[in-house]
Length: 108
Image (cartoon, rainbow, N blue to C red):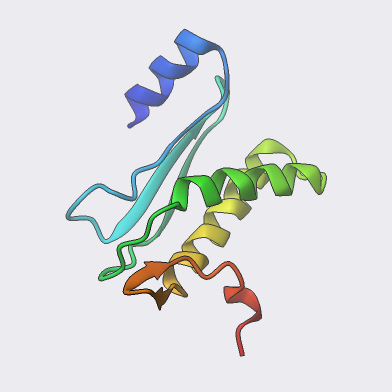
């Protein structure tokens, strides 16, 4: 993942976030952020037994939201990781499928 992040940065010249949530066998969902200077290892407990769709979209939207609130890119990525992890952990079943709970921080 680290090598992939560096290759993408080298090729396209942009900051990179490589998600590792679909890697098997780990106790943590680990992502790598790299912007050419800073590399962040973003780890959170892997939520077992939940198969969701749309985590990458939620992650990127959360990053954009935190940027809009004035956070720098590194802080936005870190806060978004926490947000999407909570949304996965708080997922609910709808129509027989696990869906992200975007309101997990406000649940009773």
